[in-house]
Structure formats: C-alpha cells, structure tokens
Length: 301
Image (tube, rainbow, N blue to C red):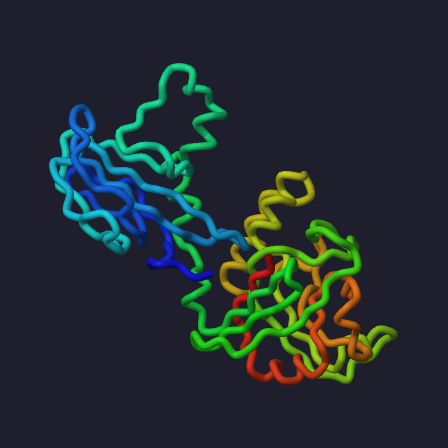
C-alpha cells in the first residue's frame, strides 16, 4: 500500500495548452527537451487504487515551450508543470516503458495494441474523477486472501495483524450462494453483537460486522453478464460510493461481512469455513468490534 508519492485522489480532464497543469497527484518521471516535433516533454507517473487493485498510469505532456518541473519532483493535482504550447500533445499511457517522444509506427496502429498501451483521456477522466485513497482513511481493514491475514489501521496507526478464514469455495464471489468471498473495496455498514438466533446463530461467534458487497465494480460485472439492469447498476454504484447498503437481493448475492465462529478453528487447516464471509478468531473480533467504526474501508485482495 505504500507509495513514494501521494496516490491520485482523482483525475482532471486534459489540460489546456495555455495553462499546463498535472491532471493528478504523482511523481515526475521525465522532463526535458525532445526536439522537434515534440519540444519540451513532461511525464508524470500516477499511482491510484481501483477497487482492490493498485494501478499505475503515466500522463505525458508534449509540445511545451518549457518545463517547470524536474525528474523526481512530487506534483499535486493542478500543479503547474510546463509553459504553454501552440499544439499541446497529451496522452495517458498504461505502458510506462515507452520513450518520451514516441509515435507508434504503422504496424503498431493495431487497435488492440493501442488499447494495451494507452487510455482514452476523456473517457478515463470521466471514470476516475474521484478516487478513494486507502492510506488516507481513518479506519482501514486490509485482507489478504493469499496470506490469510488481515491488517488493521486506525488513524494511520497499524494496530495489529489477525488470522482470517474465508468462504467454503475457492475463487472470487460473483453470484448468490456460490460460497465464495468477494474481492474488492467495501465499507462497513452495520455492526451487531449477539447472541444471534436461528440454526446458524452460534457460528457468528457473538459478533457481526457487515460490509456493502456488492460494490460498483461488482455491479458493473453483473451488468456485463446480463444479470443487472442499467438502473440497478447505477443505484448500487451510487449507494456504494456513499458508504451505504447496496442491493442485497440481487443475483450477485449479499450478506457479506466479518464474524467469529462457533469455536476457535484450526490455523493449519484450509480455513474454508463460511458461506462467503471473512471469519476471525473469537478473541480477535471481540477485541476489534468496538474499535471498527461504521464507514470503515475494507479492502479484500
């Protein structure tokens, strides 16, 4: 999760040629004169978080009359990075290995090749106008499915690492009743302390912390698969961004959160315990329950 420069909290539209400013927080990767036809070029690397993934994209500003920054400078969104130009060339590149004054040659004009290396600026900015930054959260729960551990930060201080278990089926949760644990960024929306009634009440270990699965990214996947309407997808995305409950009765399922167990489970076993929730040892969830606030960010990856 650590970065050597501020993670992007969102992206602006392409800058004007008269006032060339960074479209997001980042670190300058290159600044120099590349000669005709590019002129001065500035390239800025941006780390950002999209659902449970950490991503990197590079903004490129070509045709500048001069650069106002140097390599390794840290810039903020809106920071002036170059003097204006008659013909500003602006790009967003997924491929950060491309040289500054790079122009695709004829065989590389294949659309698939371009999509792998470039993002369409207007479309990208519209989809990434506002972004969450996990490091800035007052309460963050980071769950690693590979390490089978959860790390918790409160007010920027790491308060502990905890053993966790997952759903009975392997893989990423996608549908109702698939017994899998989701991957993604969610927010705590509900907390309850037992005893819980019903045939499975004892398996909560006396504590329940619910998150707002499905999120906007889950809903977008459901829309592509024909499981959700455009309207329900939009409503789920809006509720998730507001840290509110999302539709729990959709084909994607719901009712995902953290709880304890009927008794302490074996750390050496497969830890495939729940119907999709994250299972903590009873002593750990008792310790954490009062400290985890409603609205806390949860990242499962």
